[in-house]
Amino acid sequence: MGKVKKAVLLGVYENSNDPEGFVFTPTASKINNLTNGLLEQNIKLVGPLKKNKVLTFFGLHAEYPAIAVTGLGSMNASYNELEEVDEKRENVRSSIAAGVLKLREIGAFDTIDIDPCNDAMAAAEGSNLAVFYYDDLKSESLKKKRMKFNLIQNEESDNEKWITGTLNAEGQNLCRWLKETPANLMTPTIFAQVAVERLSKLGVTVQVRDRKWAESMGMGSFLSVSNGSEQPPVFLEMHYNNAPNTKPVVFVGKGITFDSGGISIKQSADMDRMRADMGGAANVLATIYTLASKKAPVNIIGLTPLTENLPSGRATKPGDVVTAMNGKTIQVDNTDAEGRLVLADGLCYAHKFDPLLILDIATLTGAIGVALGSSATGVFTTSSKYWDVLHKCGIETGDRVWRMPLFKHFTKQVVDSQLADLDNLGKYRGKGGSCVAAAFLKEFVVHPNWMHLDIAGVMDNKDEVTYLNKGMSGRPMRTLVKFVEDIFNNKMF
Image 1 (cartoon, rainbow, N blue to C red):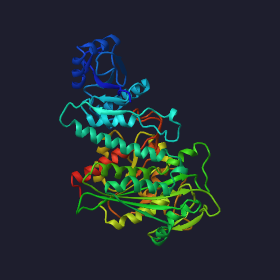
Image 2: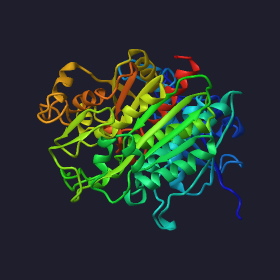
Image 3: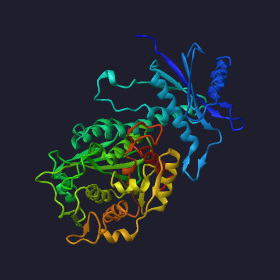
Image 4: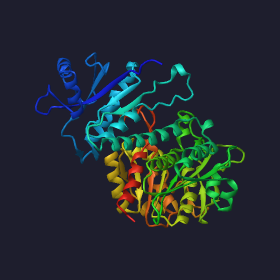
């Protein structure tokens, strides 16, 4: 085997007092000294280093054939109230991401030593998230180069923060991988197998429930969605308890492994993206995976009703009436509004665990994308206390959340049904769709602490988040991990 080729990636701040100047991070300053000031001289020759701009220099030091320098933006960046984000942390994520992608593009390096840039966790997240690329099914010649990242430790706490950031990114990348995998290779059964394989060795108890079990529980709403598919439905149950004598936080994730719309079939354009309609379930699995990997002192249960939504002679028809686990009847006026049907039974079942909080998450409505675009996850909640925690977590992770209304105005629309207790579309079609869907779900919740996260708008990424490549985003997994950790660390029982 040949010698490993190593590069180093350093951060440089803009100098607020000198537009043409710059300020080294402590780590970059040390490396500059090793080059006898040659690094500083070369940067000055090239010109100002703006945020996310990357310069690469060769032959300045024997240990590093290449030294890349990335612009971190202003030293004075901090919490931006208008943007609701910690800009200093986001600058580290995006600039480190730009640097590792530049070095991968050069293609000559196996290992990159990375400057923590005064925030080792953000540096680890930016580097590991940036290089994710789903190429499992491509020929070896078409696969992206794999790279190893090492931390250049500057402070005593850097290593622990680096490990935390790496685990956070690995969890989000798992979520992205689940969502990117083609639907024929990520059926409900395969998804459950992945859960068993990934989670069991981390101390997570995984129970794979079949159709007969769901029938015995009276989950007629969930099972109605599965009628049109040849793939058997699965109700997946995951328990991780590393906080004895506490009530669990219960997550419920929508697990439609492919959504054609059923009899109310979608347009064919971009229907392939509906392989990621199990994004809620992917977030739940990945959140538990990350928390268990960290051995976090938390108590969490994940529930994911998994099925395909396809048309066939057995499929549920518009106008059919089904019965949920709590006995409520539902008029299914549109079979493409199926996510709320599977979540309804998941929410009913969640109450059996006497939870601290119930949180459901789903790629539920196109309407949330109309309202918020890809800027933030839409959140509907009955608990201002837990909303405040989640909101703060989104600021810290850079993966924001935005509170939406749960007005009775919308409840009136879903309970006005000609044939049943509820209508899965509501009375006024095309108005406030995400709010109507949340009002529908609320009819299956009696617990005082409930959150519904609609992630349809943040399902994938084009170029909005600079440290995520084009494709499925895995959002807001890191925010969910931070949320659960903060609840238990702060004993919000």
